[in-house]
Length: 420
Image (tube, rainbow, N blue to C red):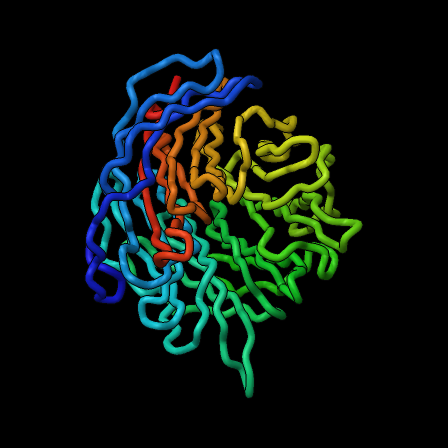
């Protein structure tokens, strides 16, 4: 694959990461792992690892792991999306031009990546990041990102949105101005209405904001969902149901005596938002809510710490109540995370542990099953998408600590690749 913006692709080299597989996690018990030797960057042989006494061995899949950005510049903040039939779009921010731009590649299921495309085209305005992608049922690809824009004698961070109909060209980008607008998340319902959640950030604290755009309309006035400056920066999440209702979750942070609570609010089809409601998970600190929605059900994952450290997962059917807290996925130290949901309601969770350079992906059926990627290049932000057949596409950023620029890596998995 060609490097971004005409840069020659870096030579593939042995990668100390991308190896290992773990068996199903029991609800409790010791955690041990058997990790095989690392192989090349584009091919990782996985070995079965034992996780507690209930684990049994099975043949491990061979996973092809690709360096997608593969250039000498800093590449970060990936977001991945796929259609129901498995066409994949992957975008990230990159300094290949000398300025931070959003780049996009695409491929069919099992295919090869297209050449990178400069989606933001911001030129010498430094700052196009935190891209969010989603597909509509009609195959339209929607994209939104944070971008610094000039207005008058100065400028501000804004949200930029564009879309591309299936087989068409990208529409003229539209800009949403509202304070210091950053960290967008977008979703689309069956009517084609685009839903947007973002943060108006001020000195590390944020107001959670929302707007929407009908298929052939303009952006509605921005609604502020949270109390002003009540949310931790970069902590929001959005899930959109097929009927146009939506759920937003964020991390509350109102000072040293009131922080680390996860709140949520629902927008009904009439357009009204419910009062923010806290989850009462018994922990000293909860952080980083991530949301995925398959149209009829929603999955929420967040980190929690107190007497222990957990990855907490909950689900919610359309118009239904939240499930019980699920903390049974053995995670050690769950750092940066992402979450996906297939059409049958199976939750896919990804989390990193930068302390020991490990990245794990878990799938919940009757219990959790895990795959381990022993990524000593320090995995960071991840993103995961699931098509109608349960095929999983996963991307993440990873770097050698203080030694090399970050790159974007990718794997694809079938449901059968997870231990039974």
